[in-house]
Image 1 (cartoon, rainbow, N blue to C red):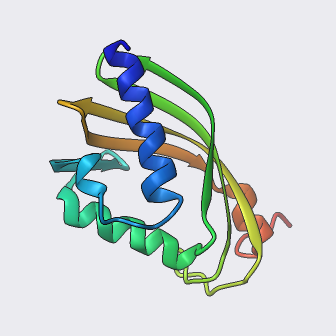
Image 2: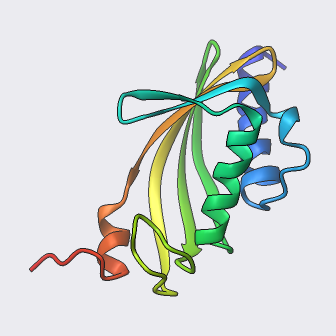
Length: 140
């Protein structure tokens, strides 16, 4: 297995074994101690405990969260993953009270893997449609 194939498999396993289950006991197998997330042009140093907090927060909002991978592309240490996230809006999200409506979000994540662990994560998601569906945004 090439390094790129190993990196893609690591990200796939992380999504399936950690994100989709919410079980974070083995997260250190996937996430580096110096893990960072890039959001809106800023870098946030989360480490393993911050990654756990992020997973728990997302799962509190969407307890039935599921990420289905559409495609993965790898180059060097980088893996791009396009996905469809589905879940029921059961907790506060971006200041929006729970609507208990099911949503789908399409997006792309970009992860950097160094020494067999994810060290950096960023991504983009299409949130307009889900915000319309839960009534947080009106197009009129």
